[in-house]
Length: 138
Image 1 (cartoon, rainbow, N blue to C red):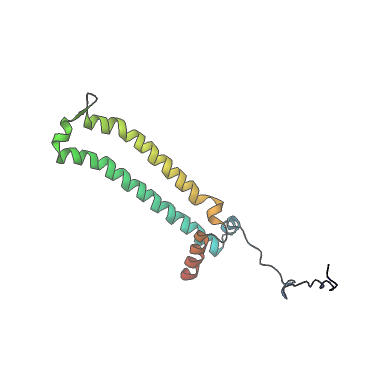
Image 2: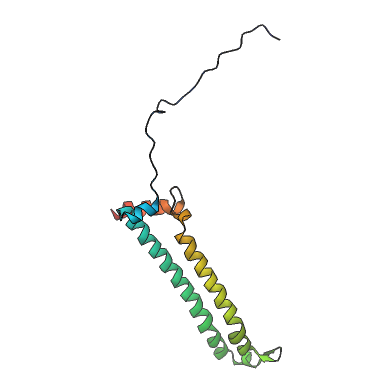
């Protein structure tokens, strides 16, 4: 062992250690209090859900409107048989319903995701976008 004395420990602190910390306000409180930030949150939620609904509507229109259009443009597809069933019957009668159920599941999942508190919490990219929208709207 060495004969050198052990150096004393030095405590390093921030000069602002006594400063008040900014309290984070829950988004649900902003919405309930009907503040301007809460209004931005609600407007953004409505816009997000409207975009989602329009996207799902477009997919339904393309799929349900596109299949009959496809069979009208290519009538030879109507004569194709799969498992003894004509292809139009198979697609319109059997595969459309599972596709609609899947699309409905996707819509509900995305709608719940946009409404979840984790999307409304501070520090998330979603809330940063809302704050920027609030600044632009002011």
